[in-house]
Picture 1 (tube, rainbow, N blue to C red):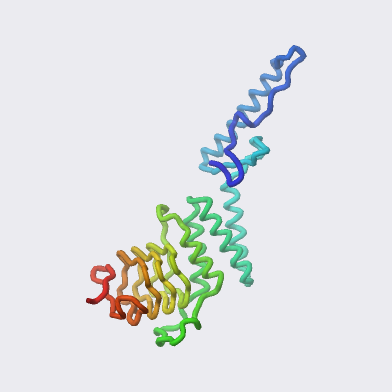
Picture 2 (cartoon, one colour):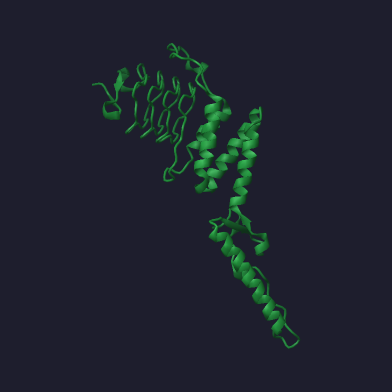
Length: 257
């Protein structure tokens, strides 16, 4: 595969032209050295490809010694993100989220791990601390989540829906969060507090929202095909179902007629 600023290394491009003998033709020794170099480069490249590693090199180098493995780079990114997530500084958290988002973008095979790290970060920073639902707020602007949590939710939304993975955001305090337009298809949000959240055009298809609190959320154009709502609190929802109490026969979201 090609790197962001490079091209796939080719075994035949790892060495330059063999020098010529005084007669203008390469000597036998030069030919043998050239063949050995080519074979060595080919073996190095084949070994990396056989290991399932994405490979890229910069345009100005073709030596097998300069081949950079995406796998090694991704592991370095994971290590960096893990270190920054243990910090108490909000800026470090944002940097870590950005790094994990980069992994999601460049390495589909590492998406489940990156998404799991992001979801764990959201859960650890937004635990439910109350046992009962909030009273109906008069001003939803009083609620919201930290910038790093907002960024983590947006990064989770970038995952490839074709890559199988589980996303656990259950029992999270996301009141007032802006999830507008995010892809949260299939996400487990059981018991989550989403009251006052902006869920306009959010994809919750096949999500689990059992016992979730969706009181006074914005739900214009939100997708709920196949969403589970067992025990969810969804009454008094703004501009949705004409303010009627929704229900969920067979886990499919409909409004009471």
